[in-house]
Length: 257
Ligand code: FE
Image (cartoon, rainbow, N blue to C red):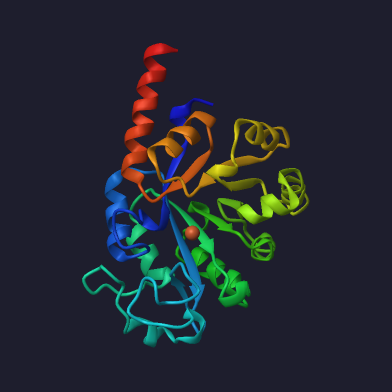
């Protein structure tokens, strides 16, 4: 695959550029021209799917405690830090921003505190994506294999499904067993931390018939590396830098190959 072909996903809407997972991040990502936007979903106490990364509120909002212990009304009183007063969005509010554009949604299903699954979150995400017509434009990701199994049970599949393989998992069970687990679980794609993704690892994943991508790709060096590996897609907090480096890689390929 040409190094210029890897798709770019703005991680949490481009977390290095704007407050992560915020309305501003969503709106501004659409102006960049990346192929995908990555964001995270959790469940409020009253069962509303909300866009938020951490299981708790402290780091990115004016609130505190677990998201899962707050109602939507309570969550809406909080401000997203650094946003000038923006509020955390429901999944439907995020979709309302993204739907008019052609961008692909990359929706990460997060667990609650102690990595416990939010009971029923996958079914609620399915209902929203289907109702809003976004199912065929949404890729579901998760570090949690049990969440992915729940998505496999959807009556209609999403546009894509991939397992984000945590670094300790790679260290603990090894890449080959992770590949085997994905195969037996019917998951067609792996997302690895770019530090775990060598040329040799890429070849092993490809030989097993799985697609692969990279996450946490931040520095120029890491972006250049995953482009050279020809990953299907990578998530980055710096989608602007990724676009520039991909364009440069494409120009080089056109000039010299
Ligand atoms: Fe995420």
